[in-house]
View 1: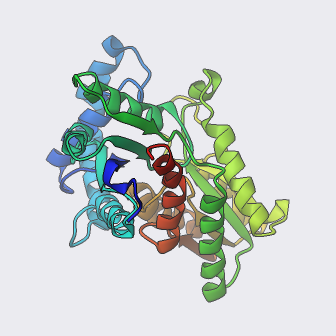
View 2: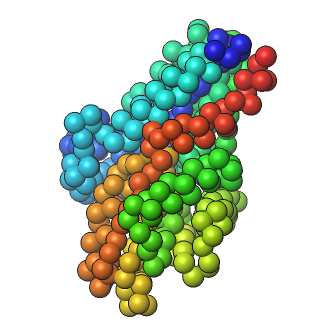
Length: 325
């Protein structure tokens, strides 16, 4: 064990998940998620009626159906894969404790910080979002601070804001793609799909779009792809506002008319597979591409709990051990 491991704990934060694929559980999760002003930047007096009278009534049942298509014997894939990733890091032995928390839902950030409180002297917080956005990483920071401001004694704290250009992260994703291609062959086009954001967030200074572009370019470079062999798009648009373009769904509908009928899609903004990758990308968007005349559509899984993913995160966390020596 590393000499400072006994003093250092790690908190991995992921977005969250409903506790069950039912309208009631999804409604509870969506209410917490969509009530966060970091997520929906609309004045509360305008947003509350829309959320409670329209969105939760219409979206809960539809989302519950989508969750049922990906639910496993272990429950939510996002939670299960995040737990497996935690176990890999914990087994490595560099840290006194490795915990996971969900920004929305359970286990909560407050609960897991309280569990770490009396076990370690230093806490390293790593949100599992390679690219920074206020709606994800910023909100995770809010949750951490909301807890710490109630403590009299605050331990040493380190917060990792992003890792979108981490060499180990880029190489881990590139290696995963290479391995997939060695087994299944190469496509005509590789699509990098990232979760979308309203364009106004970027206009207000959010670095997310530029970081997504840097990630995609870095992976494409490692794969020696020419500019006409890959493209970047954004998924999961919600509401009527303009979001980051190009929209993934529109891109996939258009590619067959351009003679591109064999695509692979990878989502380097998602640390582990979840609803947005397993249902939206792997199922719904596949149907759209094939329906538009595409012939072969494949989703390349997230890094999940792979050894390469664990090594990437350990590489990000290790420098903070030295700071506690």
